[in-house]
Length: 473
Ligand code: UD1
Ligand code: CA
Image (cartoon, rainbow, N blue to C red):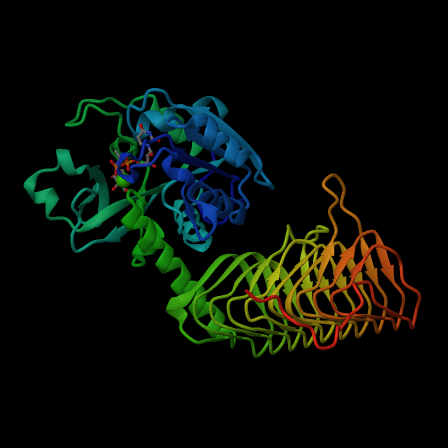
């Protein structure tokens, strides 16, 4: 066995995540750990924290909704071995961890986490691992003014002697305010030996993981407490109220972090980031904006109030006016959305997957763009639809005009070459190419390509009948 020393090689970290519990108080069909916080499931947060710890192996203990939980996590990209063990029925936290014994290797340090405690920081766990020094039992603890419900840290002098669960604690122990967070780091070999000795002779008739503290003390293995003060990091989610509370705590921290980088938020309490938001210098964001997936905002970008922006890269100096909705596909895919430098978007604009806008493009109110490329300086300022279109530089696309890109079975492309002016209320029936420098008269319905530089009009000719007498009764 490794010596009791800080200097030896650090053992590999193997993470165990307890996620078998029912979560009755969520009052939901969805397994508790699959509820989302900041766009990711609770258990995904915990798995991502394990990844940040450079874990060798992550084992998730599932029970209630096991298949759903396993399916949700299977897709998560990982730098570690991800495995699942089932716990059926659920006979307590000790019984839960017992299920992992067959898959745990002997040479690791095991970090026990819960799938419903999403906001523990990797550096906190790193400190806990360091505290275990590869051979000791390290408990993450915290002082609570009201410790009701938690396991109390029972000490004799300074030395930790036991964890007394709420329902088993003596009146004296109930007065202890230092509680066990539910998170520990423990050498795998010792853990296995102690798990084999658990019993359920306690007030709840459960196998308590916390019983191992007594075994460690009996075996002369030091038990160390790493005490933190940040309650958010150990807070669990048991109800919609707690979920909303942690969501706010997460968003508040993220907003603070953005402002520390120089981002101007009109109100840090009215920002929601459900993914990654990267901001260059001098970005400002007005109230009630939601960012999803991966969004990057270039230097000086301004985002107006009430915008929802998913998976988009917005270049320097662009302005996104209020109530704009951008829904790009996954970053790096053909569906991602790009907005060029100095572009003006909105208010009330909608950019759908696969939109690429060049510099200084203007997309105005009630304009919908899908799977289209607009080159530098192109404008569609009012009430229009561009789908499956390639639009050249400086094109002006009139109010009320649409590309009819779908014939009921297939999608076709519309090409509008540079310097074209499309009048108002045109219907461009794809496939179609409008030649460079051409003009299309308002109200035209086009079914054939048009030559460069021509004026094309395709509508009934205007006719006036002089002195027209209306019928009379
Ligand atoms: C546990 C600790 C307590 C600590 C508290 C912190 C024990 C006996 N007690 O209590 O000292 O202060 O956490 O929140 O460990 N789970 C399973 N299978 C089971 C039982 C639980 O997977 O059979 C999972 C739950 O889904 C949850 C986690 O383990 O994610 C903790 O279970 P929970 O019932 O919340 O433990 P507590 O009784 O609160
Ligand atoms: Ca709990």
